[in-house]
Length: 162
Image (cartoon, rainbow, N blue to C red):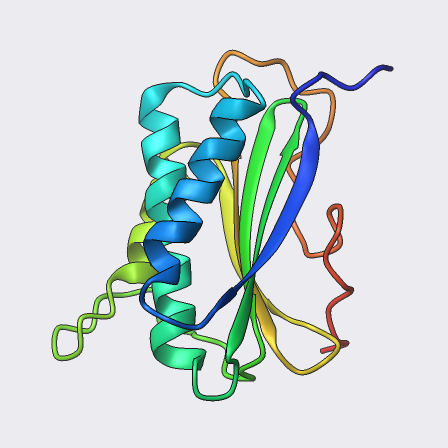
């Protein structure tokens, strides 16, 4: 089975600075458009919002322990996956709004992902950090592979044993 021309995995590092939020969003958009990924505008906007939220969370909450964050975009037959890795050991548990501090970013990621028919999660990495990821189906593209679910699909380091 020959992969589609748009399939692949791209990873870049960014400093844990506010300016990395729009830069990461633009980089992911440019990759998706440049690779001619068959992604509708609504899904594209959802993916870009997820990237913004995940990078914002990494910058705000992990920047002290993680001066650099990793952003990964993977596109497979029928799926697009975005992930953000940082070196902070805290694994966010609350995927519900926290009215006092904002706290709606991960709830928004979960909502967008679920509405698209995808999945998202947070997992620890072997070096003590974490990866927060979301996988969404490409509408109208027949997938020959199951939904990407965990770091390791295809390029993340294996998660630490629980």
